[in-house]
Image 1 (cartoon, one colour):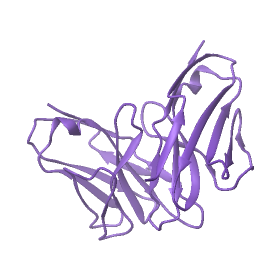
Image 2 (cartoon, chains in turn red, purple):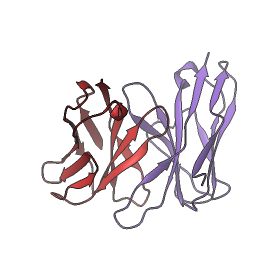
Image 3 (tube, chains in turn cyan, yellow):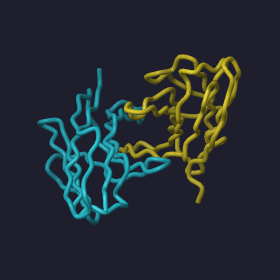
Image 4 (cartoon, chains in turn blue, orange):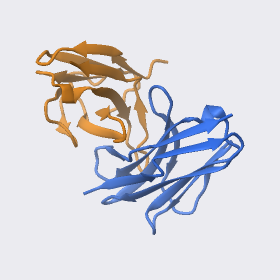
Length: 112
Length: 114
C-alpha cells in the first residue's frame, strides 16, 4: 500500500530559527514529490521534485529529494511568524490519474 | 483569475439529509479530485475523474457519489449524511504531463453533520 509519512507532526520554534521538515514515502512507480503550505484555507503549492539531489529554492525555503532513500526534506531558514502553517508532503505515482498521496502534515508554529 | 471554486463554503446538515458540493475550474484541466481533510490525517482522496464523463473511487469513497457531466465541473454528493462525514472537503484539479502532477485546490467546504 502506498504511503507517505511526515515528521515531526508538530513543531514550535522562535523567529529566526531554522527548521527541517521530513517526508518519507513508499510508493509504487514514483513520479514526483510535492510540498504544499496550508494556512487557513487551501493548500498552496511550494515545490515539485522529480530528480534526486537537485535542490529547489524559493527565498528562505528549500527542498531536496533522495530517491534512493525515499525521502525529502523541506528547510526553512530565518523563520518568521508568517511561516506558521501546516506543511503537506504529497507523492504522485506514474499511473495516468494524477492522484496524489498525502502525508499527515507537519504543523509549524513560529513564535515572535 | 478564479482557478478552482467550491460552493458552498460552509454547511450544517442533520443526520440523514442529502447535499451536493459543487466544484468548478476554469483552467481546462482534465483531472479533478475530491479530498477530505480531518485532524491529524492529511488529505484523503474520496473520488476522482480523469475526464468528462468518467469517475473513479479513491481511498475513502463510501457514503459519497460524484458526477462529471461537464469538463469544468465535478460534483460530490452525500445521499444520507452521517456525523462521520463532518470534515473539510477540498476539490482540486490538475493537468498531468510528463513528470508534472501539480494540483490546484479550491478554498474548501467545511461541513458539519449533527
